[in-house]
Image (cartoon, rainbow, N blue to C red):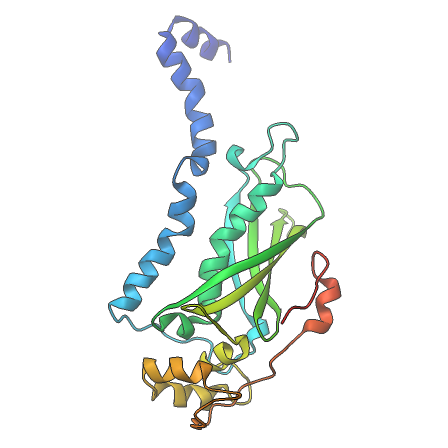
Length: 260
């Protein structure tokens, strides 16, 4: 430390400031302008180009239970994520980290849906539950899972956890996100989107064999071809319940109110 102080004492002021500035720059780099866009929007943009160019993606969902779905991202509590006064990850940073997971995570959940022209999603609302702070420079993991769905919304939970050197996992925060699937301005039933993706331990594989024979136009029409006014064309795809796991809503963050 004495040598370092001597070096800084004889160094030009600009060089001395550089020695002090570089560590702060490194620990705050992800908070620089446009970094949120690069981490959150750019992957979505690249995926859209790949779909437009006709790239084929392997469907790993066939025959699975959608509630087994998990998607994770790893972060570090750098200074740009921390409260300047509380010396821990700030509340807003949990949402910013979750943003980087909601888009890719939702694509991973119902991938074939997003390969259809005009398919997108929107975030309706969020709710948070904070349990324990995350200290500066600590590594943490954000994991997204499907909590439930109804006729309109996919309810996903993002869990923020740390793991000690002894392997003990601590949960610090949970976020509940309301996500709606859209094609243009029309809302897509989550149950239909999941059936289109081949989910279902009983009918998933047979459903996917049918989906593979359909054109993108036919898949899109099938998503809306039900209820009053439907054409009645029967593709044979078996759709699961229109609502699932809402009985667990009392355990979710926030005060859940069912909407139609």
